[in-house]
Amino acid sequence: MASGGGETIISQDTYNIVTQFVKASELITPADNHYKIDPKSRFYQITQIIGEKLKIKSETYLIRSRFHIESLRNNVKNLKKFIPASISLYLDIEKENWSKEIRMLSIMFLNLEFDMNKKEEEVNQMANELITKVQRCVYRTRGGLNKFLMDDKGTLMLLCWGLPPMSNPDDHLRGVFSALSLMDDLEQMDCKAYMSLTTGTCFTGVCGTLGNRREYSLLG
Image (cartoon, rainbow, N blue to C red; front, side, top):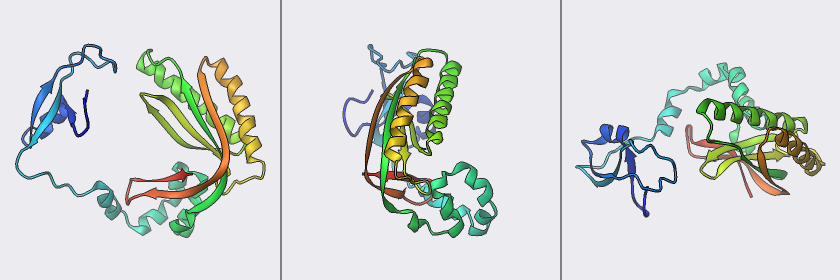
């Protein structure tokens, strides 16, 4: 609904919370409704900040201050269930800086297209089945799922072969075999897929700032 840069659009719920801090004008839902917005929904464009600007200490710093190293050590076993094997080693040695490497990787961008016009429960179930199918196929070849994104451009997965500690000299072949296997599996699920597969040198390691805005990512 924004027509240019620098505009801030908020929903009715958000406006109810910040109404004493801002002035805003109500927007009319566009006639073409490209993003299928509920016509009954109300949105506002902020036109002015009232008084001093809000000063909020970043949650990322607050989160870090709430945890103590001893409590983390006691929960390493449980934390590993939610952390990729490629970085779980650094929980033990507590040397995150050592996770940064230049590695030779094989990477697949996988874009999936399936019917998003069904009921929400059906879409969620389909997405869950697709993720499970992709993970099983990739894990069989000792690959890993690094990112899973869903937005207006579709569903995108970033799959990798060669991340520590499971690097293999034939990772490029493992990626190709996984792609061929996925083609058959996804066809059976009536899901269109677009794949691109490449091999090259990448930076791997923890990126971001403190607290909960960090992730194990790839650049290159």
